[in-house]
Image 1: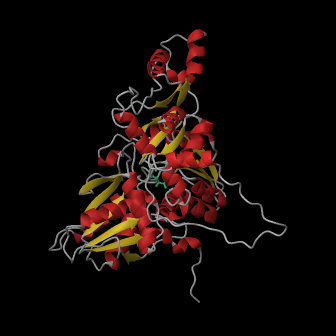
Image 2: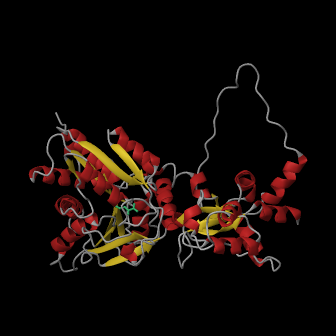
Image 3: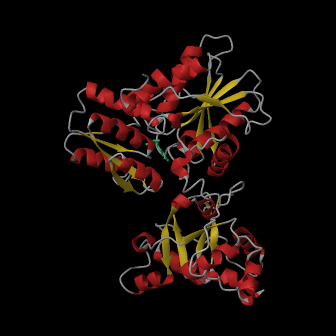
Amino acid sequence: MKYADSVLDLIGHTPLVKLNKVTEGIDATVLVKLEYLNPGGSIKDRIALKMIERAEAEGKLSPGGTVVEPTSGNTGVGLAMVAQQKGYKTVFVTPDKVGQEKRDVLRAYGADVVVVASAVAPDSEYSYYGVSDRLTRETEGAYKPDQFANPAAPDSHYETTGPEIWADTDGKITHFVAGAGTGGTITGTGRYLKEVSKDRPEGPVKVVVSDPDGSVYSGGTGRPYFVEGVGEDMWPGNYDPAVPDEVQPVTDAEAFEMTRRLAQEEGLLLGGSSGMAVVTALKVAKDLPKDAVVVVLAPDSGRGYLAKIFNDQWMNAHGFPTSGGSAETTAFPPAVGGATTAAEPTETANQTKQILGTTTVKELLETRAADKASTTPALLYVSPESSLQTAAQIMLRYGVDQLPVLAETDETPRAGEIRGSITSEVVTAALLTQAGGDEPVAAHIQAPLVTVGAHQQLVDVYTTIANQGPAVVLDAGAVAGVITAHDLLALAGN
Ligand SMILES: N[C@@H](CCSC[C@H](N)C(=O)O)C(=O)O
């Protein structure tokens, strides 16, 4: 009989598959290492097993203990699976940018999940690092593996991921491409591949980090991005900057487009960080000769992202294009007892649709910007640190009653930098009653404005704006402006 003694014995030994369609025009061989075929569904099973076994060996985790860890999901799943098999409890702290599906998976394994805000400085007591530290202190028998600095994590890749790639490519790998979050994968796998290939005539394996645009590894300041599980806003101990030869930034838009293409063209339903790494792998492979072998690491499956990257509505609402989607229709037998018929659209409704159905949100912003009579900038906003007096002045000068509140930045603000909103009623009440004009907006901040996507047709967003008020426009995840019912009126009235 052929079987594993425990699910834990199935970790690792994942296969390589060649990309055939998205590589059009590329001579080199591009191979993807499919880490979603690990039993917990991601590469993180490897580090989870190693970190827990080392903690047990070192006496840091004993029967009845609790594993507490900050995680964007996958490490949590790996730890939950290993801990459950070994009889430990688990508590995971996840940032709110992590999709609900991923949190549901953690709970399915029996873990407790604590959700914290993503838009918090890493050294804050409210960040997922800070909250997990507090929970570890407060929980008896708690052990925090700390995937960001635990040497067992890169060791697991040095001992398994690297050797598997070397063996499966018969030592012919020339380039290794992977994202970096904690840094463990790139450090451990990259270090092994460089060491084992250092004396060969064609030179050692080149290691390339694929990084979300905004993350520190590729020179960013840690500004927010939507790709999950990779990139950083601080420098983790497990990232050894001596290992990578190069680091390349990739935008969310590029990553998401490739993630969808991999499902539609290669039959590979992978997560956003895999799409991101493939973008970099193809850039690296573009000018390489036929005998080059690029191995790109795909950390997890696309099943955890069905409500985001693979959901046209979510993509559209965040200003990401959705070419190549597919439709879902229903074909039930007619209802017994007579079917109801939809009301005929009125003539006025048809006219509205005609005006609004031919213009995108972005075109409306462009028309407004080109209108000499309009003095309103595309984006009016205040930061949490702005004074109430500043908010009042902007509202009075441009005749607006609501402003988005965005984190202060010199660049185009991103969706993850939306902090809330503030209305003229609240500013007025604060100024007339208790607060002085110097008081910061932060003390009076309200819920964020609704968001719409720049590439959506106005016909698809006008009821949102009519019902929920001014909307922040997102273009590829960046804040492109604000549109109001007044803008729609100006269009309809002309
Ligand atoms: N800063 C990152 C994620 C850090 S790596 C964590 C790891 N992948 C996990 O599964 O916990 C982000 O923006 O998601």
